[in-house]
Length: 344
Length: 116
Image (cartoon, rainbow over all chains, first blue to last red; front, side):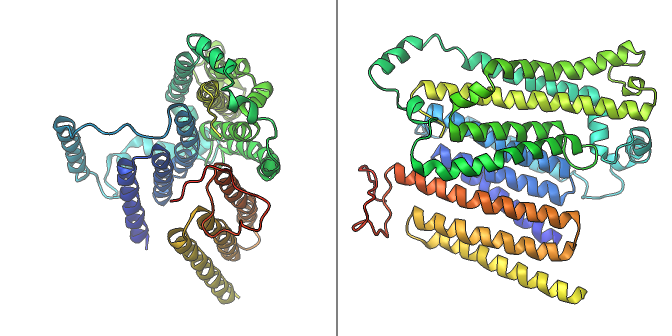
């Protein structure tokens, strides 16, 4: 039965990926990509990697799709007609794909007992000692936030850097400010006016439902954030869900109202604050006499110190990811609106 | 007792799968966007509820059942809203329903109509 599920999901995955390649309409391709991401998440679930599946579903299927759509609002959804078939890229892609397929023959079977991962002393130690040493049941969080805390610090910094880069590229507004002004004087500014304000009475249902749902989305984000010690979850997923709540609000009520609640300046502050919080925990543990990100010294009791450290570090990740997603969304959506289009 | 619960679960899963199948057929076979999302929105929501009910029979009075209940409530709120928003957006963009009853109606779709 499990094999059937695996094969079925794999076939859907292949079909979805091929469809993404063949579809000419970028909007359809984005939706298909989201479906492919969700299939990946399901595959991760069948492999018992629930944390990864959660991240894939939230980031790949959820927020990336929204960001792609924001980009499409900016660039339009029709693909430029393809030039004639080019041989060298095709050969390159085929050879790389072929070597990857060849490499899969060397992958050990799922659950094989003699793989390096199973035989490693590290695995044994994580499984046996981490519940006592770190004191939290979810070993993924122990490894992610404590044993390999420095790696996760790096990942958080990557998110931070990416958001800064997007902001740098997309916030160059003043270059085209003049022509925009001319457009606006010519009466070509439909988007910023018509959306945002409660437009037609037909928008009532999305308005009411989203008002009901958004508090629960935030509540769920906090649950994922603080429940990461006990079950699947953590800062990355929680940050994405939190940002999704804000983005939903923005899509339904308009970007400028969201920017009144959470201005770009505040988002930028949070963006830096999350990374600072993470690094700050490391510095504090150094001041207290431990190594960088050694949570044991944060409290009198090492296990309590680990708890506190993981909590703060995950909070830092969550804040940075939320702010990064929002900053990227503001960047794309703001530009799209400036050009008289809207992400709605 | 277990047998009854198992049978109940099986029946729920089969009914839910049937509705999902109906959804699939509807999405493929109906003539235009409005009828298609009608098929998608209605039967899909019902199928989710029935399947979750069947799964809750297996988990009994536990936290899992409560979570399943939350899933059902969430889908009951979001799926019809998404369907509505889609239909609304298509209508505002000027897509005319193929199976229309628009002659006698006071509401007219926008002027730009593209027949596909």
